[in-house]
Image 1 (cartoon, rainbow, N blue to C red):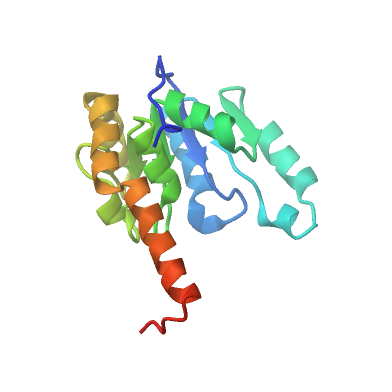
Image 2: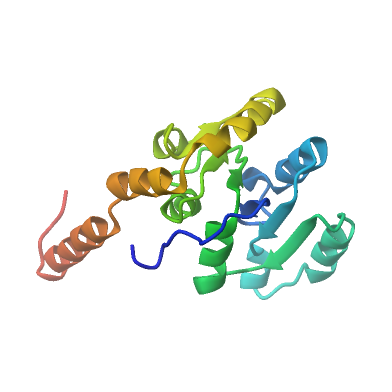
Length: 188
């Protein structure tokens, strides 16, 4: 939990962080919303093609160069850079269109005190609450959520996430489970 800290100052940019080549993650929708509602957008994430040793760099380069300067592409980020982007963002934009089993990036954003604007797909419907973000499906719902997001305090957002997703408790539970397996216990 110590790694996730509140930024000294929030920026005015929204952040999209996810797989940029996966349609279900919603990069295209994030860009469309940024164009329609005229907000600045930081984009961070990688492509599974790079993980497979193939490169889509030329296509990605052309796509990101075609966007106006109010969009900034950071590529794959992790560690301090990821936490900085999550913490300084005005909001975390997560317009997914698939039933994601668990949205770790959304939880990380909330732990950094950054509220989440997301669709109610998959586990996100249970992950995000009124103290940590807003849901949208339509563009009008997005606009309403974007207007309401400034009423969520960074501290309240962080506390809500920390209470519902205690990292230490989860880590301890996993360690206990692994120990039981290594000790030969047969699990159901």
